[in-house]
Each structure stands twice: as structure tokens, then as C-alpha cells.
Length: 538
Ligand SMILES: [Zn+2]
Image (cartoon, rainbow, N blue to C red):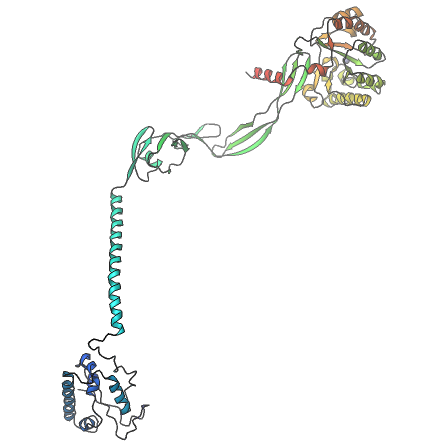
């Protein structure tokens, strides 16, 4: 059944109210009334089926004014048949939309019909033969683009397939190459590492051990797994990748030492007395550096030498003047009243000597400071022989019996007296009273003296054996000797007489008389000490 109009006549709600008194029929186009009409016929000419304004049948039928259903159906069928007939042949004005629109404009429209410009019924005109719409033209281009896109897609697909194919092939047939391992050519797969070489048993290096700080084995195989070179360069990482043609040398691993705590300490130099002779000098040592290592695993502590120290050497030797006739005369226990007379004799024969003075005789007990100054001014070496010749606890002859402080005081006070008398710094060369200088006193006095001087020839003039006897002993010297005499400690007239006898003869023999410092300068004492040290260590 076609829908019956339900909108009341009059259409007052329509903005385009029909001005005419006759109400516009509300009947709709058949295409809207039933689904039996296809869109195609409708589009061919909707205007053709619209009833003319003054068609009485349509007007009467379309109005719901009490007609029975049969008559309504008959009217609808008639309308349909009329429509069908109309669409069966092209309407002469089918494409004439303006006419369609204008016609409705003239009619003023009615409820349910939108303005022609917006009404969905006002479709674009059907394409007539020979005409082309802009959309058709676009379609032409679209078709062309599609063709191009297709080619690109095909190429991409081929490339992807090719890549996948190569990937699968490489996966199934990985590339290989040759390397030289310990002199043998081996084929390895791409990306192989040194670890692979070892894991595959191509080489089987024995790992080193983990050692404690003292060298004891803590863990078998706990050292490095291997040692090796690639193309001559050392490496340690098993993950090192191999490359075509590499030359690999893999050897057993090395031992590794456990981690440890390290503490660096200075090692004080030790003491050594080396050699033998009349001249005793100090060759200072050097502090060493030792690292104390305490193993974090073993807890053991060992000492590792970082810098070798060198012992202090107390070197005893005899001067080697290489045959040059040189002697060093030394005079102890002055100054006293006759010392100037002795100085006159030395001056007469051009002798430079060394005086080992008693401090309290330069000042305090007696004052011969002027004599000491003269001796210094005349080129003699002025050294101390202690302040008071080891009086008191040293029993007047042996400083080794004294306390360290007393020993030091004996030296310092003796040197101070010289400095005070001469106005110059005292020599650091020392002669201990009685020649008693051994064991601890050597190292106690090291900071204050540079040497302790003994003798090669003892004239025993202190016994006063007679000038001739003293002179004979003096004449027995040989090159490099140190001669012991005295200018104090008693009557020294025999000593002075002996000098007058011997000195002219010695000068005649070609002897020169030098100070201790000058005599020491004949030798390289450090080299001498090192030679003796090496000999002692061997
Ligand atoms: Zn003395």
C-alpha cells in the first residue's frame, strides 16, 4: 500500500506557503512510496511523473477525504501505470532540470519539498552522449596513477622477496673464511670469536692460576684463560672477533695475583761498615720505598720493593794517590803554648797539615784561639778532637763509653770552639780521642761528622822517644799515608825537633804535605763504597 499523506491541507508550517486557495496534494513521488521502483527510472525524469497542477484525478485521489481504500488503490495503480508509461520512453525534457526546478518554483512548492537547489531530487543531469563531466576527467587520471603505482608495488615486492631469499640463504649457508691459528689454517664461520676457537677445541690453552700475594696458588685455573696475539698484537678478550686472514697465536694463560690492599712505606737505609784503612768516611745511603701488600683473599702480607734503598756506608780505606808522593801530617791534642813554634816549622817547609784540636783548650780552660786562627789562616785544616778529650764518663780517652748525648756534645762543642776562633765553619772531619770509634758511636755521630780519621804511621811522639826516633818513623812514610803526631798533651819539643830533621829530607824526596780533605779528594769514595758493597753482597 502506498503511503497516504498525513499532512493536513493548508501547509501553514511550510515557509513557502502555497498562496493558492487550493491545497497542494501531499502525495509523493511513487519512488518514495514504494521500494519497487529502482533509482534508475526515477533519475531519468522525476519531473515527468509529477502531476500537473490542474489534473483533477490526482487532486481528488490524493486527498484523504473519506474515499474508500479500493478507490485509493485504484488511483495509486493508475498513477503507477502512468508513471511506468512515462519512464518507458525518454521524456523529451528529461534533462531539462531548470524547467523542473522553475516549474516548482512557479508552483510555490509545498510541504516536504526543499528548494530546488538543495533538494536531493535535483540530481546532476544525466550524462548525455558526448558530454564529459570534470569527475569523468579525474577518473581518467586516477586510472593512469593506478597503473604507475602498480609497477612500483611490484618492484618493492621483488626486492623484499630477494632480500628474504638472500637472508634465508645466508642463514642456511653462513659465509666462512680462513684464519691461521698457531700456525695452522682453520676455517671459521663469519662472526667467530677467539672464544669460539677455544670452545670448539681448535686450541686448548691451559689457564693460569690465581696466586696469593706471596705466590702460593690459591685457585688452580683461576688465572687468565689464555695469552695470545692477533696479527702480532697482544689481546686478552675472548670476545675478540676474528677477521678473514687473521693470524692468531694462542698460548697458555698467565698466573694472576689476588687483589690486595697496598700501603707504601719508606724504608730507612741500613748501616754497613766496609773496608779497611786509615781514612774512615761516611757515604750516605738513600731511603727505599716498600709497598706492603695484604691479599684480600688470603689475608697474607708481603713487602714489595718499589725503590731500592741504599745503606749508609762507613767506609774505611787508605788513600790511593797513584804513586804520587803525598802524605797528610796530623797533630792532636793542641793547641798549647808551643803550637806556634810548630806552625813556624811547617811554614818553613811549605807543609799543610791537619790539626785535631781540643775545644776547651781553644777557649775556656786555656785560650789559644789566636793560634787556631793563625793555623787556619796559614792553610791548615782545623778539626775537632772533642771538647775535653772525653773527660768524665769517657775516662779522658774513650768516647764510646759516653752516652749518645755526651758524644754529640763533645763533637758539637769542639766544632763551635773552632768556628768561634777562626770565624769560619769548622771542618766536619773528626778524630776521636784514643782513636776509639766503633759500633754505635759511628751511627750516633753520623749527622755531625763526615769522617773519622785514623793513621797509617804512628810516630809515638807522645811517648817522647827522642827526636831522632820520631824523625825516623816520620821518614818511613809512603804515598797516601796519614801520619799521627801531637802538638799538645805535654812537652812537644821532641816533635818539633823531629819535624826539623825529617821534613827537609821528605821534601828532598819529593813529598808533598796535604790536609785530610785534600788527601780524601784523591779517591772516589762513593765508587769505592759501591764496589765494596757489591762485593759484600755477592
Ligand atoms: Zn788525643
